Length: 77
Image (tube, rainbow, N blue to C red):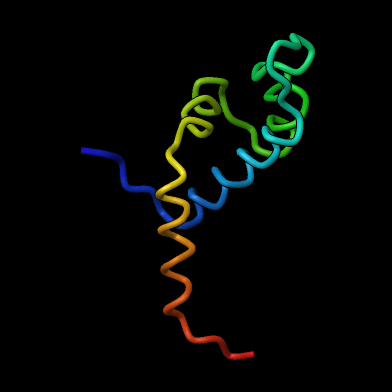
């Protein structure tokens, strides 16, 4: 049985994944996951490295489901 994440946690995971995509470069030790976590993610979202790894391994299906739920919400403006 998978974990159920709340909306704000999914948004945080999405932002962390975006930061990682901007700065991660495979094969370059200066831009590996650990370096990206230390230099970019930890400054904005303090978390341990293990939590960071679980965030970037979260399936994108949950994030897409979050966005589809917002389509049902009526817009005021």
